[in-house]
Length: 115
Image (cartoon, rainbow, N blue to C red; front, side, top):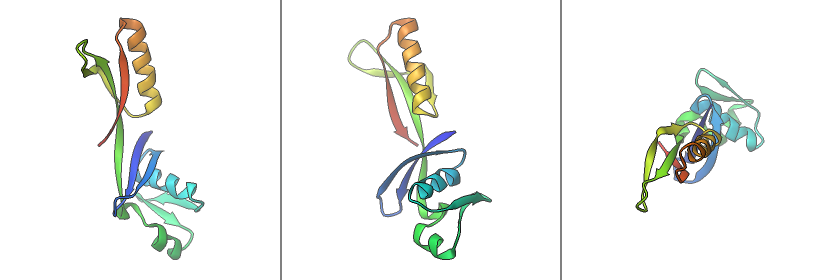
């Protein structure tokens, strides 16, 4: 499962949603708004053409994957990406950061990066 940042073409941030594909993440956003929607052939399918005209499909949105970086303190006030690096969910990154901090005694943090 990947987390995606969804933004309208006009630049309004709609939030982050999870899905195996960008279309599944967009479908989750539309479901949160109360629409009945499925995913077929890489795009969202609504109950009516009118709903699709209002809400839009995959090509009508900017849908970018979010990557969570696990970083460790460099001891000089800076941060560096750890060897365990990038995670696809925030929960996974938090677990990684906590384990690294406990195992090696490093100060760690998780940083959200939109791809």
